[in-house]
Image (cartoon, rainbow, N blue to C red; front, side, top):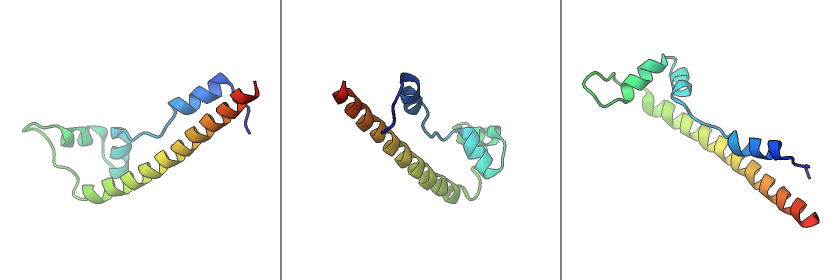
Length: 88
């Protein structure tokens, strides 16, 4: 069992995987502004990339895996802190 301090425990709470528009743009190999313009609902919007469904599906699966790993880490933290609290 790991000995947790406040900083390391709260670091886990605040550093989860995220999907940003910048990450999406990088995956498509385009500028952030291109993705942002494709998302707006105005006459000036750009078309979404032609293969957007495939790329977003792949990113969703990767993100789900990242979230599952983060959930496991959070459950471990909670378990270990509960055990540590019982010892004191």
